[in-house]
Image (cartoon, rainbow, N blue to C red):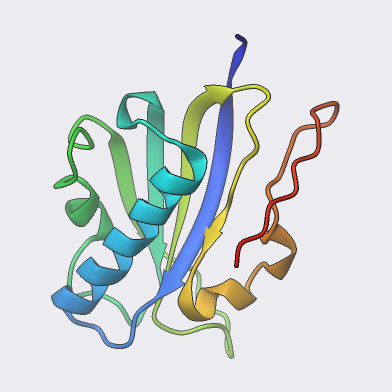
Length: 137
């Protein structure tokens, strides 16, 4: 089986700028990422988390590092560029991971962040890969 380095995007929102709210949202987001993409932490190369400027109670990477086998993953937290009128209290990620070349990618957008990329509600496949369509309901 051929494996490739792939990129997966995702985002979520939190109701308030507290450690508890951010921990709950990041945990939910990473649980969904792992489940939907059948990820193993040993296959993750790196994760970049970005947060909007209204979130500063805790680093998302600090939360991710407490997950089983995630302590060896290279992670970085950055502040998302502010654009007037953009989604508030938003946490985004970009993950680089090794996956089978034929595996569909499920970008994970939860809560109010689901409106950011409604076009990614179906799995993304590489050109030449078989198209997979699966309900998210």
